[in-house]
Amino acid sequence: MPADEDFVERRARYRVLTAGYVGDRVASTVSYVEDGPVRAIIDPGMVRDRSRILRPLARLGVRPADITDIVLSHHHPDHTLHCALFPRARVHDHWAIYAQDVWTSRPAEGFSLSPSIRLMETPAHTAQDITTLVGTPRDVVAFTHLWWNSEGPTPDPLASHPRSLRPQRARVLSIATRIVPGHGAPFVPPRGRSSR
Image 1: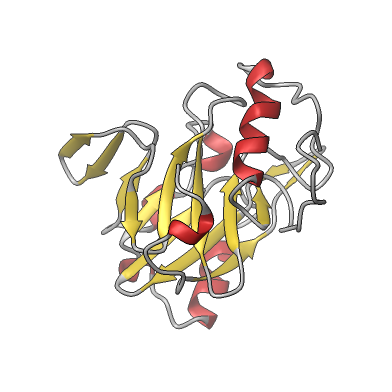
Image 2: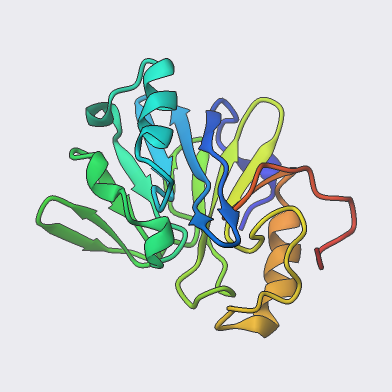
């Protein structure tokens, strides 16, 4: 994976539509990323009410039919439940792109949705985990389930590949300057810390 300065462009913008949580209830962090004609939703999963996804999008002037792409960090329902809100979107996972009735196989590693949006394979929580790297004018942002929130956890109690967690986090931190975790608010990782 190229370093952050190797993004073709760093012009994307993003908005966390709803910050997720884990506890007595579970919600996914759902995000919106825009780069030129690409308008992507990352992890449209479980939320208290779908208006927590649609209302912030509407405030940005974006309709569900405007969404071109959905990226799934992995296949757990808490990150996929609301894919159908976006009827025209292609869906990206670890090994394919799905559009209407067309399944196009491809590895996620290094795949670019746009000059500023790139996928990388980061198996740890599941074997199918991918991280979405987004180059913005200020940061390279990693949308990932390698962290549930800013506290980790370390170790991930539900990881199917627990030994991969630390090296995958280190790999992401060698590129990204901001993390958007699977179930929490964005955070800036402490320098030199891959274990949290």
